[in-house]
Image 1 (cartoon, rainbow, N blue to C red):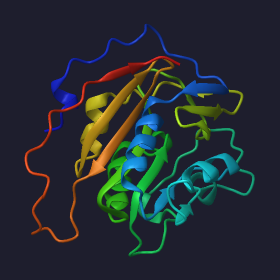
Image 2: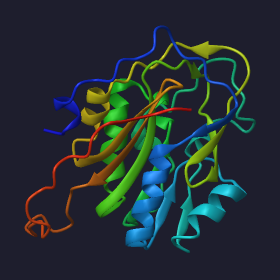
Image 3: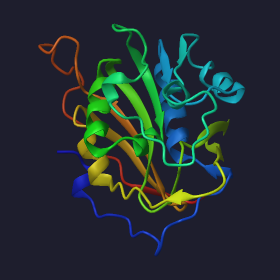
Image 4: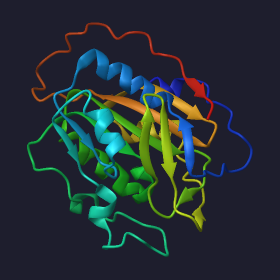
Length: 233
């Protein structure tokens, strides 16, 4: 059982938060930056839209960087839609070649655009690309309204992100509570969770699966879980 489900939930603001294009603090990214400075990954998989800013930031840690723009590879040529985007079946997504494994995976807000059953299938598929102890960074809406298509995130600094949101209609909040996200990540252990004031949550997970299941964890007893942190925009 993960530590998220055993801790008191942060009280959410009344009513859905309305995300806007702009710069927001990202304590989850700051924690990821700290982890990567300590471990120096061999390879990184970014499932978001490619940008000069993101490439520059991630290339500080590894020259083996794979950008797999999951949204645009799964939609039409324009990427513009008048109705909510849906990835459909996770098994049909355009992913890296079989056998490739990564030390870091950035999922961003993409889980909003899967049907509930496909969310779990997507995460299960994602495990096949993770090396042991790989880090996974993702965002999920607890109370923020969700745009029709994924947000475009650009890394401004080690602790801030620029959100670019499409104008127009919004969907109801995804309502993904901490425990629900934890349940999706059954092969991962939670490192940090941050409830943002903009209605999103940031999560950093560590992959616990092993390529050789008989290899025991050399870290010994698990450390005491880190506290939930609440971040302002």
